[in-house]
Image 1 (cartoon, protein in one colour):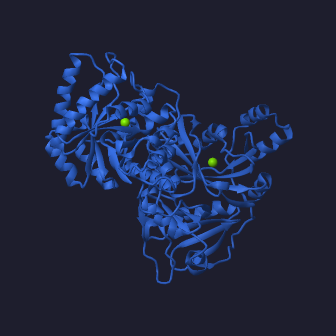
Image 2 (cartoon, rainbow, N blue to C red):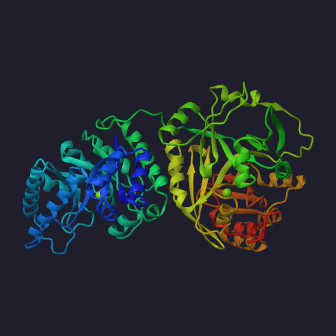
Image 3 (cartoon, protein in one colour):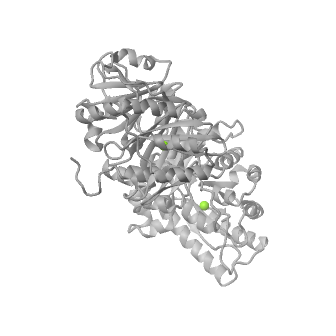
Length: 629
Ligand code: MG
Ligand code: MG
């Protein structure tokens, strides 16, 4: 698969864009005329700069409002075309994109369009150039790739071909089977973009909300499969108009783009009829079977406090690392590690973020395969020396620079607890609180990073995204999106904070970056757990008594149940599948907290309760401007 991206897709000046595009691993770039006009160098300088980065210019665009114009416009357009051809030859590219005419002056009629393209083809041929015709979804007379193809087919000129763009086809729900009958040599390039499903004006939707394949809701994979079935083996080029991307980091957006294209190619490659697509083979997405452990980095003093909270939650210290200051707290299938080592990455992470859950381990079928796929998709590998004889756990960087360790049952990794750790008896052990497993991990990120991490998880692991929901914080809205593995073996809620007055925004500001803000554990009996917690001296997050009057009437709850919920500060929710119970701890450090949930077939995360929970949590955090002690 030959990968390309349009300069318009990312932010910055042209040199910065080209550097980011090359670094991300693309081999081609579409030069947008505006990027070129804003740059001070000559077309030849731009061409040289592109080639110095090892890139090829896949096309120059756009040439607008060309076909079917009355005189004297028609003659002037051919003069303009000749000037564009001059630029292309200086740049060193042979393809120009002509998008279908949107001018009110445009005359319809296929014969007129064919005549215009025939003449343009003749002029292009004299210079050894090619012209690709693309149907804009809002074109005046041509707004469907099938009609654009009919123009190209009838023009029947070797220098005139079609350009397919997934957005224009999929936004209008045009049958993609029609692509399969286009001869591959007449497809000059294929542009790809996804978009969230929003019911709005096509032009506005296209210019502001496109995103990377896999980040939106359009069937881009089916579109690409249809293209690949023609035997097409040319460039797939991202053309993403998105305000957020244009405001974001060029490097990060380019990296996301490359990851999305390779992921898409890998999926399409698995279609046996997609003969055109060649791509290095990489392992399939890894199924996640659970959370192996979550690791906190902490100072000695904070670790003492955190260990105290964990014991009230029913955890007990079960093991100690043989060479490092790392202790293991366990309950049910849950393992939490407390790392107070003064050396290594945990300590560096503590220095920047304070006490935080900086690493998590995911259990997969084959950690090596998962690692190979992550590397193929551009994930950053993490290495840290271990003592002789100790187990090296493969790991990659995740949200906020934190770590994702990969564990499996087939290699030495399964023996890490025997090899690296020695069992201990916890003399301060309290009552078990019936916590079974990690239900979900909530990561708080800046709003602009959300799509990046959705793509990260869903491309490397067998995880699905669910629709984005708004969480109402008393100080603003926080966007929340869930990525889940089948059967709930791993659930991650990504919360995107737009302002620092929200609880999520405060967390990012105070901990200097994104990270795990809460960990939710599962119990099969919330009231039994609440009783054990009470016996252990656990301090739950106090919920306003007013909440319970509302929840009782909203769901028609039995008043006895409402009283029990209220007595234990348990929140309640219900969806079409079942019921949900939630119990929270207070905040620790800069807004980290624990949650305990019981699911009775419920699929969500209690979004409706978030405002009450956030209001209660906010009462506990250090007021703005008060220095950390
Ligand atoms: Mg396009
Ligand atoms: Mg939660």
